Length: 303
Image (cartoon, rainbow, N blue to C red; front, side, top):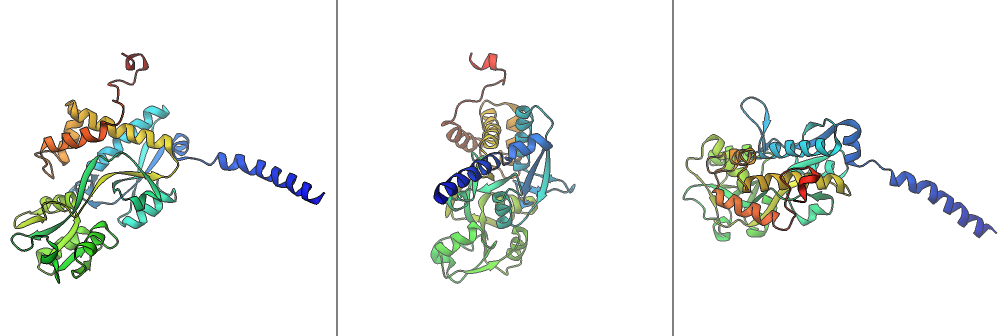
């Protein structure tokens, strides 16, 4: 009797509890309700996201989040605004996204370990870990780094790579890239390890004379994209669609997208890269996805 009654009670409790779990608010639900998308970002990662001379947050990833905002606005058929949350600590940023305190963060280096806690979008950039050094000092080989003072951001991919490449290197922690580069200029460290594009962007924004990146091939490669809380597939679809539109627009020479990318990464951009290299990467990424229609009008898509 008691066993049967217990089973019935448990069944009723489960039936009551399940609807509550099923109705947990997703990010897209929250944006539809409030019209606000919270964007967590660092502001020390040139050319992705940084504060310019006019005290405004700008960069490649800031332009990407604007495209995502437009895509969400189209999908939800309501105004959407972006609320910036400045978080310069990478670990804190990942944690806040994972816990749902931040809706989305971009400029994010993909790792399989991070993928256990957040979901990643299509990558809109490719980079890797290299060393910024004064010219004619270090080659970047493991042998050349033994006993050398190498600046790193704590818990960064640069730090992880250096521990593997040369355990005998002396790793010197710096909270921000700018601080480490300043110490490299003054000769207090021999190199600074980090993201190739960020290192190039930071040094080029000031003065690149006398500096170079080594080795030729990065110690580690990875895609750079946006991360969102897990189990938000509708939001991820919109994010990926916005990024795919950017890459496809660049490939068909749509000046809106060409200008957006080239401002930061093109031949005359903040971090100058050959247009052929950018095109090849974008083609590789979007080849495995459906072509984005030139119009969102359903009557035109099937033509």
